[in-house]
Image (cartoon, rainbow, N blue to C red; front, side, top):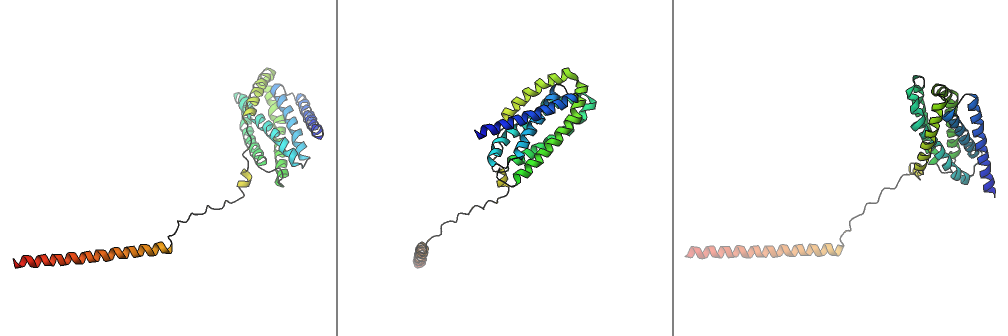
Amino acid sequence: MTNRIEKGIETVASEVMGAVKATKGKVAGLTGVFEHLAREHGQVTGLLLRLKASADPKLRAELFPKIRIELLSHEKGELAEVFPAFLEHAELAGFVEEHRRDAEKLDALIDDLAKTATTDAMWSRRLADLIESVSRHATEEEDDFFPKASRVLGPEKSDALLKRFEGAKARIAKTIGAPAKGARKASTKHRAPKAMTARPQPSAHRVARGTTAKAGRAKTAKRAGGKTGKSTVARAKSTGRR
């Protein structure tokens, strides 16, 4: 029952923040996809603040993966369908590179948090860094990029971009897998070097037996050499008498 109530609170908080952003966007003259993007900023901000207010590792483990997919699919959807339209207009083209740099920073912060154990003391600090970055990025878009783009592109183009963005975001969300587990731990632990396998050493008995065998072979060879030498001398004397 408690979990249902908490999920209900999260949903309400997210929707309220989204509605506030959307209303602010309309006042600023945002249309189509830009009004929608502002609403999504508010929704994900509400979820992030819900995480910030809790130190429960279980809630972190349950809620952050959803936030991660939302943030990544939102940014990649913008990069795929919205910002390419800016390149067609000189007054908007400069925003494309700024957005790309911001998106890379967000990706890195999201990745860092995803690889941090929810029980780690660093989790809260990395979450705070992510919230600050998301807030700064959203404010820049809503106060600068989006109003100019709404004015330059017009309502019709903005509405067309909304449909394309939603389609791209849905496709991208399905391709986002879970982050690699244990990456953070692997970077802080040193693996013990593999033990070298020593070759088995022969026993003292085998060494002694081998030495005796070699000595025996040497004596045999010496006797054989001596006999051969005597035979050769005998043959030489016999030949001389003839």
